[in-house]
Amino acid sequence: QVQLVESGGGLVQPGGSLRLSCAASGFTFALSDMSWYRQAPGKERELVATIGTFSISTKYADSVKGRFTISRDDAKNTVFLQMNSLKPEDTAVYYCNAQGKVRSFTAWGQGTQVTVSS
Image (cartoon, rainbow, N blue to C red; front, side, top):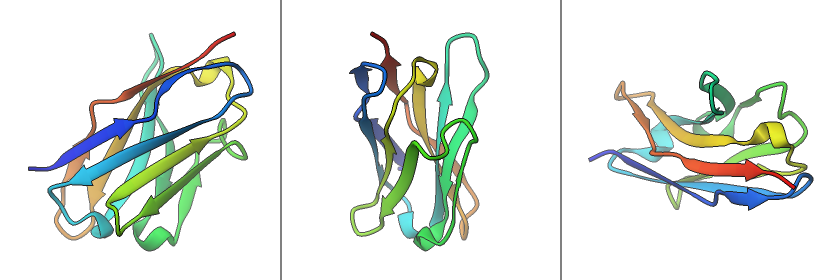
């Protein structure tokens, strides 16, 4: 069974930091592109960051460039999102996404809540 489990969300003050983790199982993690999406109340889900296989490439939404860093540890089947200088507009449910590159599939985690508020 394919499973993605996010963790690390919580309540932080503006300017604070959080590190999200996504533990993957049930597929060959190293052969997948991994992404973080987020969805704020009343808004569409948006792509935050993507990291390709072997960490060769990364892409970020303009709104998080310079503040967020996506990384992966293939030995631990885990993808991370380091979030610094958090802003209230970063408040959202953050979702982990996997896209298989050999076997074609897409998987989603259940999400973890990030709330940035004073």
